[in-house]
Image (tube, rainbow, N blue to C red):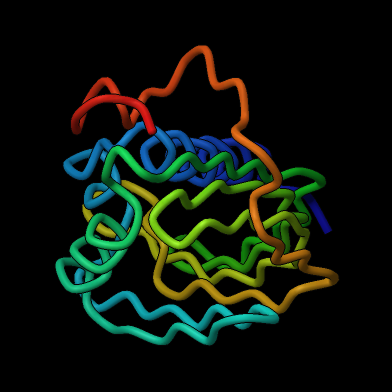
Length: 161
């Protein structure tokens, strides 16, 4: 079986673009990564998020994260991508993430395994479905006042926490 390396690389770029847009509050870029009828199912130790529709999902993510009281970093690694045909593919990714939420005084650190489905529409790969289950999650009180010397969301949405 021959690997479809160009499609695999384009899907890698899509997932990395999605994560960059997520962490830089680029809602327009985030929306461009998603199929209109996308669905998500994220299961963590302290939450379970399900949603459908690209606009709803972008709005929900923006509403929960994009403020001057939140810092988040999400990285994905070790992709396993299977291209089924010209228009469908699956991917498995290893997520490592960290967040500080000053509004509730908590930090979240963890890892998870993403399982995604991709669809090609109008010549571009898009995320059709995304889900993950945590390998581990640590949800703790913020200890002391962290010495935050740079904070993108603080610059974009107000002043740093």
